[in-house]
Amino acid sequence: MVKRKNILILLSLMTTVLIITSCGSNVSLADYEKVIAERDAVIAERDAAIQERDQALKKVGSNSNVKEPDSTININELISLSEEGKIYTDRMPIPEEEIISNIAVQTKELDGIMAVFLTNNNEFVIPDLDVEALFYNNGNLVETDSDGHDVILPGHTVVSRLRIPGNADEYKMELSVKWIGLHYRNWTDNVSYTCSDGNDCIFIEFTNNGDVDIEELEYNFVFYRNGELVEIDYPEDVRDLKAGATIREKVYTPSINYDSYEIYINQAHTFGL
Image 1 (cartoon, rainbow, N blue to C red):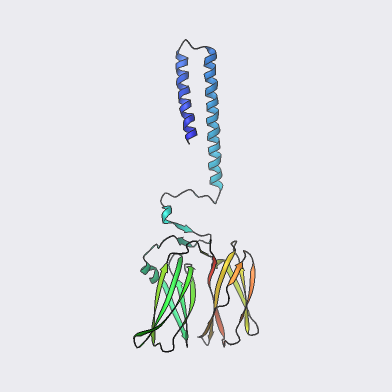
Image 2: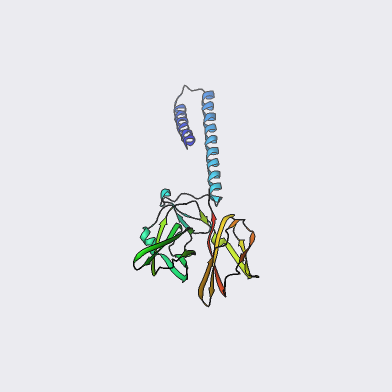
C-alpha cells in the first residue's frame, strides 16, 4: 500500500511538471519527451502493482482455507467451529450454573457400583467436566468418589463408573466445569463400530471414518440383565486410530451374567500438543 501511495504521489508530481512544461516556452522538446517517458514508466509500474494486487486478492478469494475477518466477531472472544461443526469456545460463554443446568444426569445403581450418564445439552463443547458423588449415612458424609471427562460434544452422553460404600443410605451429585485443555478436539462423530459375541468375549471393531488421526479413544460397556444394571466395564483405551483405519478389540466377559449391553464412546481425542 505504501508503494502504491508513492507511485500516486509521483504521478501527481509528473502531472504538475507536464502542466508547467506545456504552459512554458523555455523547455526543450528533448526535456519534454524525457518527462513523458518517465511518466509512462511510472504508469506502467502502477498498473503492474494493481495487477499483482488483484491477482493476490483473487487467489485468496478462491482459497477455501482463507477467511476474510468478520468485523462483528472479536477474535479474542473466539467462537470457532471444528471441522465437524461442533462449537468450541475459549472461555465460558454462559455462567457455570447455567451450563451445569443443561447437563442431564441419570444414575443406575448396583450393589457397590453406580453408572452415571452425563448428557451435554448445551450448544457448545464442554472442555472439562468433573462429577463427584457424595455418600451419606444418617446425614453424615461417609465417602466420596469422582470422575472426569474431556471435550464433551453437544448432545453427547458420557458415562462414569463410581463406587458406592456399603453403609451409604443416600447420595448427591455435584458437577463442575472448567475451560482448560482448549486445544483438545473430540472426533467421536467420525467413529463407527460393529460388535459380535465371541466365546466369553465381545469383539468390537472401531473405524475412523474421518481424515484426522485419533490419538486416543476411550469407550465402555454397560451390561444389563432383564433391564437391570449388572456391570460397567472400561476396556483399555484404543491408541493411534489412523484416518480410514479399522481396529479390532477383544473384551473378555466370562464373569458377567448379561443379556444386553450398551456401548458409549466417552472420547476420541486429538490433543494438539
